[in-house]
Image (cartoon, rainbow, N blue to C red):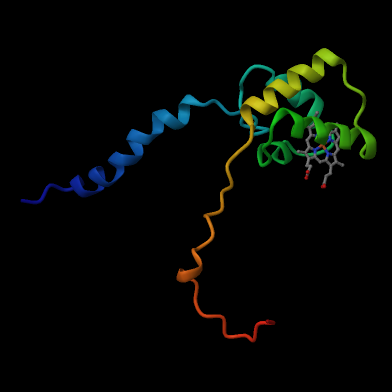
Length: 122
Ligand code: HEC
């Protein structure tokens, strides 16, 4: 039996099931920032000189984000931030773009590596 369109309908089913999960996390269409508490402060303070992609592609603990802010203040002309404003920003950044495990796979075990064709110093 052949039902026209059935194959196409079935092939799209998995993507329909995934959709609600993707939509659950709201992301600002312009900046790409996750719309969680504090995001508007980050947008206002942190997208003046560069794209928010510099933020969204980075990750780190509060201390790491703090050090990036200090680095920009010391070398890139970022103004001193009001302590409350800085707290909102650091809380947002460390919660939304917190430390990530490495995206790289673990190294292969020595016995799984190919033989080294080059001479090795003793
Ligand atoms: C006064 C301008 C300015 C403002 C405002 C600014 N930055 Fe930056 N930022 C820079 C410059 C310049 C760089 C270096 C860009 C490059 O390497 O192309 C940079 C780089 C970065 C990087 C990449 C650092 C790295 O290790 O590669 C991150 C992350 C970042 N900024 C986050 C932020 C955050 C968060 C804020 C808001 C608190 C912010 N920036 C506000 C100027 C600014």
